[in-house]
Image (tube, rainbow, N blue to C red; front, side, top):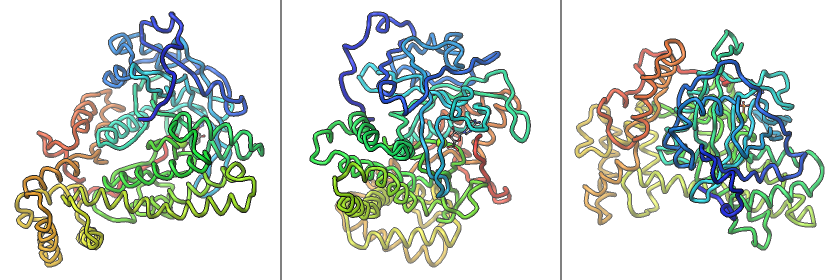
Length: 500
Ligand code: AMP
Ligand code: MG
């Protein structure tokens, strides 16, 4: 992950000695005050730890033993502030389903930036910690189910090697939240390279002062792309770098069948990490039109639309930069457009590279795209499971697998096999590489639901813990092969809801 700068040596003795290991350096809190609002989390009645990520805590330089107990409950509920925290809610805007809105952290609070022992910098943020000036009509709270869901899926994404925000802890608050029904309240502690979103720039742009954009662009470069700070045109370099990260990120989503579900510009992080696990879900049978979110009725954020939507969001980002790209606005627009045009190619290159790896191709041939597309068409037509089909191709005799029967497959298979013959790698190396690029387990929707059901209605965290253990090693065949199974054909179509 990406961090900069002068982390060490700036800390007082007190902070260095903090028993829990907190070591904050809050650079965001030093930005102009229009960009956020300072306030503390609202205390909660009777917090309890639901799940704590000891491995991540240690990575962050925190004392996992101490924070697994009462100290952690007090901290991660917002009832006690860690030393060095400077809590604030960030201002941002965003295009939601295409329409511009003023938003901001309505139920989130940034505690500060933890500096890890390696000198990396991570935002520590609460989600569900009470109302803020940006809450609009919301209660500022979150329910246990959706927070555990974010914990499971974000940690699964991390294990799959996909850049993502992570989850440090979920506590229950002991207070109800009211949605369609009364639910248990909870707070998630989210860890991110930063929470700078496309929508953060849109908010500053809406203030009508180009200086704010210049400051935020400089800050983003310093925080995520320090090597570009001395570029000839830093804002243009920022746009290019953000596009590259998004191309790589969305390609990775596509390669594992991840459907984000709510790719609004406020849910696109400039760090290139996946953020906002509301209605996301993994595709089972291959179908580009796959949509899980109950509110996405037009399929705007369907699986197959994600690259195009990323490009749309980046265009909104570029628009915010126009005032600082060039003194001549027409020239600035031309520069931005020229760059934006390259996005679909950037994405395609990343995706093709990833698909080649999934098919065990070590070299590049012009016909690879056709070979891949024809396989996907075949999966689509035969409603085959995306994840398992690709993993199964790594078998010694894929032609013997029952899911690969039929004329289309018997035509495709020899094309792929002769393609493998045109490279020097032996089949054993091909199969090993394929197993390292095609996960055996993804967070299957019915398994996630089962874990949440046990946790939320029966207070049984065991199902979730076992699922988390399997998801932590997604490229290993699980002992219990049932974790690989798609939902039974009789299961109703899976629907997700925004976790508000
Ligand atoms: P999201 O759908 O999670 O991306 O959130 C969109 C916006 O709604 C953000 O500004 C959130 O802070 C805000 N929001 C979502 N849920 C709540 C809530 N329960 N209370 C206040 N604001 C909320
Ligand atoms: Mg959001």
